[in-house]
Image 1 (cartoon, helix red, strand yellow):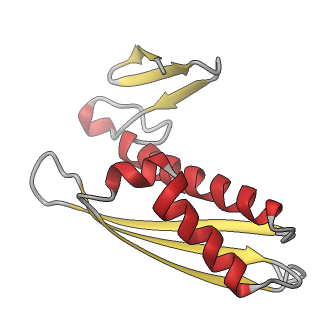
Image 2 (cartoon, rainbow, N blue to C red):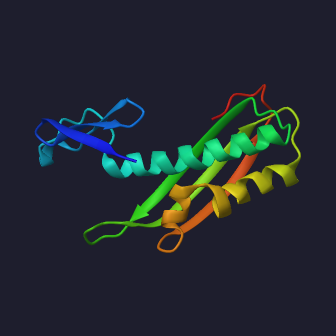
Length: 143
Protein backbone atom coordinates (compact mmCIF):
# COMPACT_ATOMS: atom_id res chain seq x y z
CA UNK A 1 0.00 0.00 0.00
CA UNK A 2 1.23 3.47 -0.77
CA UNK A 3 -0.01 6.99 -0.08
CA UNK A 4 1.32 10.40 -1.11
CA UNK A 5 0.86 13.59 0.90
CA UNK A 6 1.22 17.08 -0.55
CA UNK A 7 1.53 20.30 1.41
CA UNK A 8 -1.28 22.68 0.47
CA UNK A 9 -0.77 25.66 2.77
CA UNK A 10 1.02 26.00 6.10
CA UNK A 11 0.86 22.48 7.45
CA UNK A 12 -2.38 21.50 5.73
CA UNK A 13 -1.93 18.40 3.57
CA UNK A 14 -3.83 16.56 0.87
CA UNK A 15 -3.29 12.81 0.89
CA UNK A 16 -3.82 10.51 -2.06
CA UNK A 17 -4.21 6.76 -1.61
CA UNK A 18 -4.03 3.89 -4.07
CA UNK A 19 -7.81 4.17 -4.52
CA UNK A 20 -7.32 7.54 -6.18
CA UNK A 21 -9.26 9.50 -3.56
CA UNK A 22 -7.90 12.66 -1.98
CA UNK A 23 -8.28 13.35 1.74
CA UNK A 24 -7.41 16.63 3.47
CA UNK A 25 -5.58 16.61 6.81
CA UNK A 26 -5.32 19.75 8.88
CA UNK A 27 -4.79 21.14 12.37
CA UNK A 28 -5.26 24.21 14.53
CA UNK A 29 -4.35 27.69 13.27
CA UNK A 30 -1.95 28.11 16.19
CA UNK A 31 0.20 25.38 14.59
CA UNK A 32 -0.05 26.97 11.10
CA UNK A 33 -3.01 24.86 10.03
CA UNK A 34 -6.21 26.12 8.43
CA UNK A 35 -8.73 24.29 10.67
CA UNK A 36 -10.39 23.09 7.48
CA UNK A 37 -10.30 19.32 7.89
CA UNK A 38 -9.83 16.49 10.37
CA UNK A 39 -6.62 16.21 12.35
CA UNK A 40 -4.42 13.14 11.79
CA UNK A 41 -5.33 11.59 15.17
CA UNK A 42 -9.04 12.06 14.37
CA UNK A 43 -8.44 10.32 11.05
CA UNK A 44 -6.88 7.39 12.90
CA UNK A 45 -10.01 7.03 15.05
CA UNK A 46 -12.20 7.30 11.95
CA UNK A 47 -10.09 4.59 10.33
CA UNK A 48 -10.53 2.37 13.39
CA UNK A 49 -14.29 2.90 13.42
CA UNK A 50 -14.60 2.45 9.67
CA UNK A 51 -12.52 -0.72 9.69
CA UNK A 52 -14.44 -2.40 12.50
CA UNK A 53 -17.80 -1.10 11.25
CA UNK A 54 -17.25 -2.48 7.75
CA UNK A 55 -16.23 -5.84 9.25
CA UNK A 56 -19.28 -5.97 11.49
CA UNK A 57 -21.75 -5.08 8.75
CA UNK A 58 -20.17 -7.57 6.36
CA UNK A 59 -20.30 -10.36 8.94
CA UNK A 60 -23.89 -9.55 9.89
CA UNK A 61 -24.90 -9.58 6.22
CA UNK A 62 -23.46 -13.09 5.88
CA UNK A 63 -25.49 -14.04 8.97
CA UNK A 64 -28.63 -12.64 7.29
CA UNK A 65 -29.01 -9.89 9.90
CA UNK A 66 -30.50 -6.77 8.35
CA UNK A 67 -29.03 -3.61 9.88
CA UNK A 68 -31.08 -0.61 8.77
CA UNK A 69 -29.05 2.07 10.56
CA UNK A 70 -25.62 2.00 12.19
CA UNK A 71 -23.51 4.51 14.06
CA UNK A 72 -20.13 4.16 15.74
CA UNK A 73 -19.18 6.55 18.53
CA UNK A 74 -15.55 6.64 19.62
CA UNK A 75 -13.97 8.48 22.52
CA UNK A 76 -10.23 8.36 23.07
CA UNK A 77 -7.80 9.50 25.72
CA UNK A 78 -4.34 10.68 24.70
CA UNK A 79 -1.19 10.65 26.81
CA UNK A 80 -0.26 13.99 28.35
CA UNK A 81 3.34 13.77 27.13
CA UNK A 82 4.53 13.72 23.54
CA UNK A 83 4.08 11.81 21.30
CA UNK A 84 0.54 11.94 22.86
CA UNK A 85 -0.46 8.45 21.74
CA UNK A 86 -3.88 7.04 22.54
CA UNK A 87 -3.92 5.30 25.90
CA UNK A 88 -7.59 4.34 26.02
CA UNK A 89 -10.29 4.03 23.36
CA UNK A 90 -14.00 3.47 24.05
CA UNK A 91 -16.13 2.37 21.11
CA UNK A 92 -19.92 2.29 21.17
CA UNK A 93 -21.76 0.58 18.32
CA UNK A 94 -25.36 1.71 17.92
CA UNK A 95 -27.46 -0.54 15.71
CA UNK A 96 -30.84 0.31 14.23
CA UNK A 97 -32.60 -3.01 13.64
CA UNK A 98 -36.17 -4.18 13.71
CA UNK A 99 -35.18 -7.64 14.92
CA UNK A 100 -31.75 -8.91 15.86
CA UNK A 101 -30.11 -12.03 17.28
CA UNK A 102 -27.94 -10.62 20.09
CA UNK A 103 -25.59 -13.62 20.04
CA UNK A 104 -24.86 -13.07 16.35
CA UNK A 105 -24.41 -9.35 16.91
CA UNK A 106 -21.90 -9.96 19.70
CA UNK A 107 -20.09 -12.55 17.59
CA UNK A 108 -19.73 -10.10 14.69
CA UNK A 109 -18.25 -7.47 17.01
CA UNK A 110 -15.88 -10.01 18.58
CA UNK A 111 -14.71 -11.28 15.17
CA UNK A 112 -13.92 -7.76 14.04
CA UNK A 113 -12.03 -6.95 17.23
CA UNK A 114 -10.16 -10.25 17.53
CA UNK A 115 -9.60 -11.40 13.96
CA UNK A 116 -10.44 -9.18 11.01
CA UNK A 117 -9.80 -5.48 11.67
CA UNK A 118 -6.11 -4.68 11.00
CA UNK A 119 -6.42 -1.22 12.52
CA UNK A 120 -7.68 -2.79 15.76
CA UNK A 121 -4.81 -5.28 15.67
CA UNK A 122 -2.26 -2.46 15.44
CA UNK A 123 -3.62 -0.92 18.66
CA UNK A 124 -4.23 -4.15 20.55
CA UNK A 125 -0.89 -4.44 22.37
CA UNK A 126 -0.52 -0.80 23.42
CA UNK A 127 -3.98 0.67 23.94
CA UNK A 128 -6.83 -0.29 26.24
CA UNK A 129 -9.84 -0.70 23.93
CA UNK A 130 -13.31 -1.09 25.41
CA UNK A 131 -16.50 -1.53 23.47
CA UNK A 132 -20.19 -1.54 24.10
CA UNK A 133 -23.25 -1.69 21.91
CA UNK A 134 -26.92 -0.92 21.95
CA UNK A 135 -29.75 -1.79 19.66
CA UNK A 136 -32.53 0.61 18.83
CA UNK A 137 -35.65 -0.04 16.85
CA UNK A 138 -34.86 1.10 13.32
CA UNK A 139 -38.01 3.21 13.21
CA UNK A 140 -36.56 5.43 15.97
CA UNK A 141 -33.81 7.75 14.83
CA UNK A 142 -30.36 7.15 16.25
CA UNK A 143 -29.21 9.87 18.67
